[in-house]
Length: 418
Image (cartoon, rainbow, N blue to C red; front, side):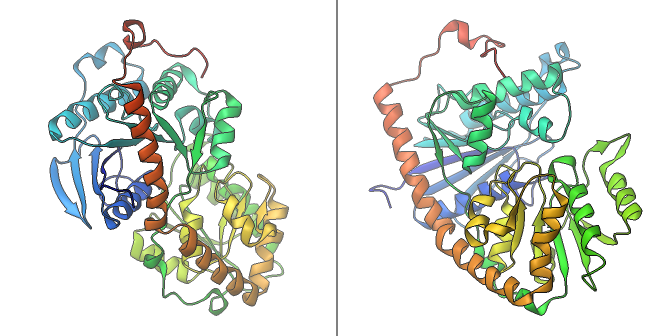
């Protein structure tokens, strides 16, 4: 614990139970509660179109929900939807931050949707935690960037460049963005995401389940579910009772059809039976983890992988690809559980080990739960972030008020490389 409690404000366009929420929302909720739990004053400002304006407190965290109104001048950018969304989001966060009428020691935001784009000169200290910028999301989904998303990506990159400190949930994400030129030479601090492990305790061990493979996440190209279906086809003949359960939101299109229909067609052609249960809340997800022998993440790229950490907290072994940030921890438990991207044969063999050996699944599951509890507790990760916040505050203090030239303040003046 630092010598004094810090006043921390999180900026996020998503929050569990209030908006469509993924890893960013889960991280924000868990991290802010972890900080409040060790004595800091944590606030979360959530700005999303259509959100009802209200303020509440949950588990010691002050939550401020605000809508994102349309910008009057956005009519001048009729075809630039992604760019307009980020500009509207950044403006809403700027206005609502001013409206809070509070003084904070540090502000934390993601580069996603550029919420802190207009706040750098007002923020006492700014920490940006990388998620997945627009260019990387489209690349992983196998989609072209296009002019609109080029500008959207530049806005997100500019928001990150203004941070006093940049944080990444994994070395993989840092490496990917630095290799593409999205990140410059500035150092990046890697702090893994926290896991509220208590929410996943008390489930039966995996050796008491049938040979069920669970995959949780959006049904889209980046998540690699098509590769998982091919792997399941390779296991079908010699794993009696094999089952595949898919949980998540259907998203995206490919080859002229929805991705969900594409998967259904592929599964039918390969004779793979699966159950698609759609997006589920924490209680239902808990039951799904409890019924699984092993959890699979066949992602082509995933900057971290909260699903993998939840699965470990639930006592389930995880098989993932080298394209997931979570592989940095999964590989410590079982190196054979990390397989190459787009390799259904290796994926099938790694899954087979757990499906045919309930004892191995139980052993790795227990060690995974111990690892998550020891290294990713909200309080423990909060203490690591304390040091990041104190360093950001010290940097801002030593530099004085942030000055920006008139040229760089003009809309559209961003680094040329995306």
